[in-house]
Length: 130
Image (cartoon, rainbow, N blue to C red; front, top):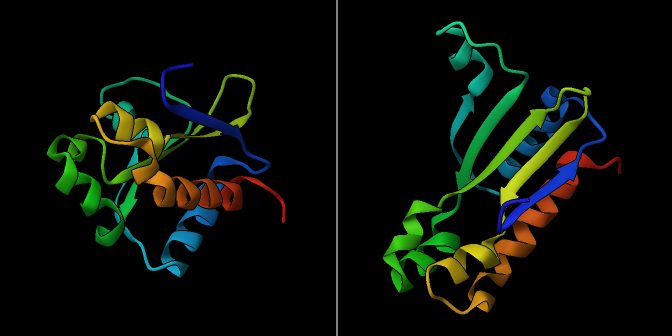
C-alpha cells in the first residue's frame, strides 16, 4: 500500500457508500467541492473502469491552518475520498491520512489530529453498518 494511504472495506456498494459519505459531510457542515466519476470519464474515451468516484471535500477552518504553516499542503488539501470497486466486487474507501499529509509537508503530524479524527469518523460512517 502507498505511504499515507488508508483503505477500508465497505459493507455497502459504491453508490450507498458515496451516499453515506455525502450525507455525513453535509450534516457536519463541510463543503463538497467536487464529485468526480472516474468510470464515466474513462467511458468517454472507450476505457472501461469499474465504479470509482473521487469526492473532494473540506472546511476552510480545518485545512487552512495546515496550508498557512506549509503552503505546499495545498496540493493535498482539501481532503479526498476515493470510493471504488475491485474486480472481485468488493467496495473500498481510500483516503490520504492527514498525519501523513502534515509530515509530507514538514509539519508536526499532531497538527493534523483534528483532520485525522474527522476523516476516520466520516469513513467509518460511510463504510460500516451502524
